[in-house]
Length: 133
Image (cartoon, rainbow, N blue to C red; front, side):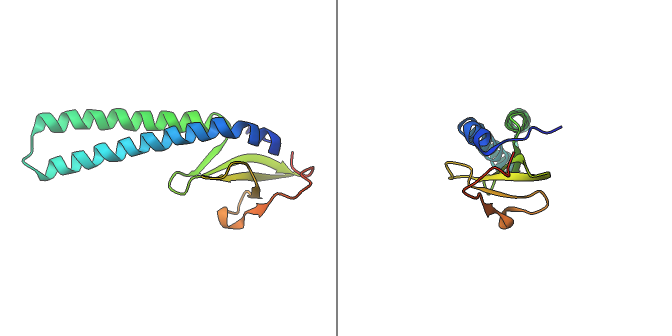
């Protein structure tokens, strides 16, 4: 069963969530860097020892990446897009499951959307948030 966030709880959790998201982005960049090195190694005079070393580094970086995803999602949020910087916090609006959504660069939760609608369907939180858990 998911953890449901109120707007206040989501905003209180946001600094920690942002920190975890940034760590995830750094780990993803590390994976991409090692992949690029591995690909360039294949194009040059192929050295099996160097290839094996890079492959082990890539395996380790990918494992760390997935650990970072788990750490982020264990905080109760759902990762929607690393590239676009989108995270959703499960919430309820009356009896309906909804998402409180955050986009990278925002300093607080200001939008929500239905669970079957994506980022383009975001709606601003109303002045009165009593309808959200």
